[in-house]
Length: 250
Length: 192
Image (cartoon, rainbow over all chains, first blue to last red; front, side):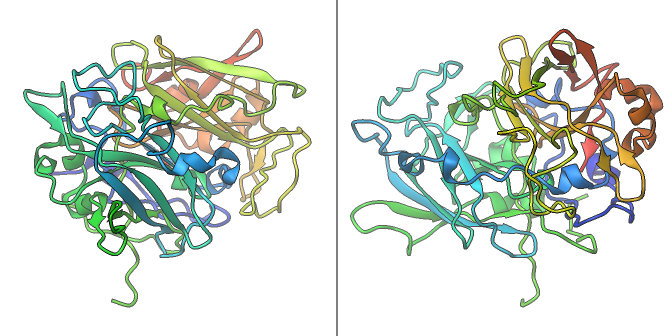
């Protein structure tokens, strides 16, 4: 199988000034993934055009704590009562591709409730809304790139992609890093989820990279008599004088 | 392995429920409401059938009118903007018809690093259900013909016929810029 999008990527010309970021190869899903039906009218048909990384690309918005309130990091404490479901702690580090922590960067998450229902006008499948769960959170990483949320284990839910289609349980993540090139929106999955092999969104990821989206059960982060722990590190593009090649499954 | 670099995290789609957290009340305000020269850049995000995307998120990033970024990685140094409250970043969810709008000021030109000048532009990310990774484009301004003619990115487009898809057109109160994900007039998207 040829990965058209990967093959269309070329390195920036040598005359691009300033620090440049690695161009991912074999990391991100193909935009044209017909098994995920919504791509059919939305994925661009033309090859991507290489954009040298200049000033606009190597800079980006830097958000500190001004976008975050105390309850934003604990999705179980945003209402008067507690949400139903398995209480979990999700934590990890945000790193760049060189292994350096990305400090003081905004992490936004959103998710379904324990029954697999989003608190959203467009989600109308008949699972109960939880009046004590909104499903959105924000935190800023520490100086060492670490972050932590307390939330509840999201449920799986059906969707209309194909007959008997179910999304595996997941938490959406949005990250900025420190440059426009590092912006990333992704999803975190849970270990051992039997739905993962049937999910065209998770499966759209190159096979060698798929496991990176699955969190790890973390005994050390599990709080006695309180919450299960899951670890999920997120790696944004790093700076590289020489482009880093990754294996990909073409 | 001592020299192993951590493997990059793959992208996944933003999905249809991004509104739970991503839109901010002031997200579209690249500049404060009282900023001098404030104008709107607005348009629609359209699919291959020409229908608006009701569940997309448009983000923009730009220099200020003097061509400055208040960012430590700008090799020219951090320069406070002459526009008080200039944020540089805009974020707007689309409405039911695919319409988005941000409130901003026109950015200045930028040194390209090789003696050339990049014409005024905004970098744009579009996130949506059905997009497994963001798509990236640029907004240029059609009333900057001299600057655009000298712009290295526009000059390097493989198909000059598609240059117009990167041009915002002046309209009362600002500019219009539609984003076509597919089809005859598909917007140029970049690999950044």
